[in-house]
Amino acid sequence: DGKKTPSLKEFYAEGNVTIAASEKAKEIKHADKVFENFEESKGFYVNPRTKMTVEKFPLPIYTGGREMKQISSDEYEVKDGYFTTCSFGHPHFYVNSPKIRITRRTEGGKSYVKAKAYDNVFYFGNVPVAYMPAYEYDTEKKESFLVGYGAGSSQRFGTFIRSVWNPYALAFVPSSLGDWSTLNANLEYLNKRGPATGFLFDYNRDDIGLGLEGFLQTYY
Image (tube, rainbow, N blue to C red; front, side):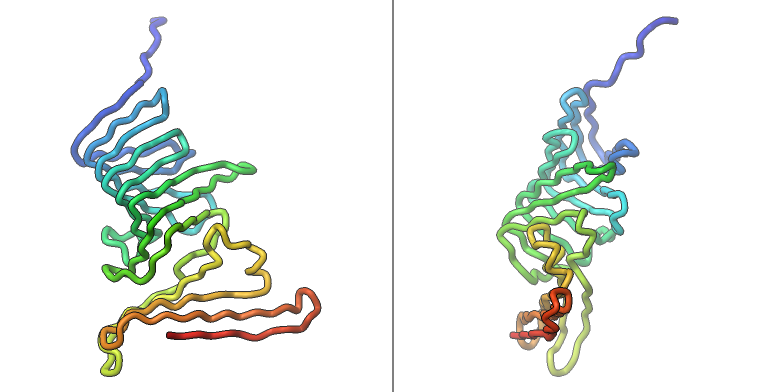
């Protein structure tokens, strides 16, 4: 009939709101209240929960918090939030932070996500296991920060929680270190002895003809 279909400029909804974004973004948002301005690529979400899938990254990234602002089409800021790769409603492990900045980007036809957070506490279940003033994670590195975890009990230690982390997965660590070494950080909580930590560093410098190899292990 020759009439132009009006485009949606703004959107507001309350309740258990679910928004499935474009196939390019591969993103699903849930929130109690949602306001989006499509012309300016901005939005505001109350009690958000977001699932973001990144091309060739092994796991989806889940974020949540008290509120979230969409600053641009590829940038979000979460207040009193968390992020994790654990899919459970109450994640087994996560990073808790009062401020998280999430940025999407495309390089060489591939999409990546970078999360930068401040005043972070790493939780295993409900137990805080580590603190870091600033934390940055980039899916381009394709390495998992959490290597493994376990829980149990014994007469010697009581109830315990143990976890192994890979500091090389952090975005600010040079990727070249992984060519000749590995580093694992052990973070534990033992009910009868309190928190414990240690590092295991393995290295092999055959790559430069030195023939040096060995390891250094600490535990406290």
